Length: 390
Image 1 (cartoon, rainbow, N blue to C red):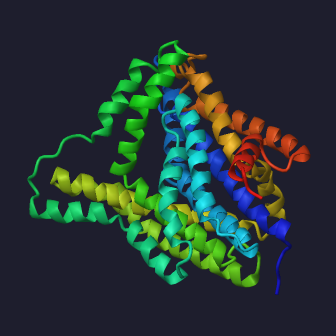
Image 2 (image 1 turned 180 degrees about the vertical axis):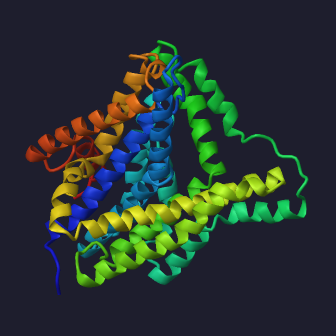
Image 3 (image 1 turned 45 degrees about the horizontal axis):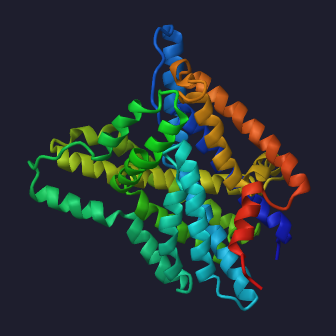
């Protein structure tokens, strides 16, 4: 069988995780870390360029970067479970403790940036545990049901029966509106307080409104099964599998994107339109996520592209450290307690800042991994995970 050794096999996963993290960073920079603000008195050419960069970056990565990251969370979960099973250990209770530690890391990250995803991962990850010992067919059925967004479909059926029902703005908007009260201010303490109270409510409510909880679990499960099936081993059979995924994902994405762009506005009922949009958008993002994910893995079969894409590997190996580092760097640059760059940087300059920050973290990761087995926070997480173990 045409395979690579274990060390090489993991490079595509590390590189994909690093790529997902970089794309998350670029989005966060364009959004000024959830503090949306357009600088005033810009020339028309800069306004047009900013809009083009914003539209392109969001088309490529919004709703997809976090999905790739979530898929790889499931991959790591199975690797850890499987490694311990080979030693005769049941990792599930230890994984609960590991998720609690992740929640702590996420809370620290949330103090600087309310849009943190680590606390969401820690919570949703608990629901992954019951599926660890089930057969792949069963869990794939569950993943598919979660992908369909059953709660939103239930709402849609109800709204079809009551098309004239009045619905208000999403509840999360109220909390996001309050960001203006503390993020522009120069007090780090007030920013932390606001992020850990108002900010966390905003993100968790928004995540529920947009179906993120169900999609996260679906992606966790899919990553777990992909790892269980050894789909990251570079074989001819797996290359054909990812090619099929790539083609099917494109075939699904094109009509879904067309509906999203041109058909949603024709729905007269606000309730039906809003609910259908939430479902359709999540499906569209899901499809394009797997276009990017499978495309990345297919490129990795080429030695030429593998050499290029391996640039992301060191960053992927210490993704926890880099995720929190990019938060601290970014919020210090953009928020009022730091340099307040949100007032001056449109999408163009923010993208450049994101690219420079990404390069800096890639170089830092490469330097760190030359002398360490794990990233700094990964080592702490590992040590605490196995605290009091034999």
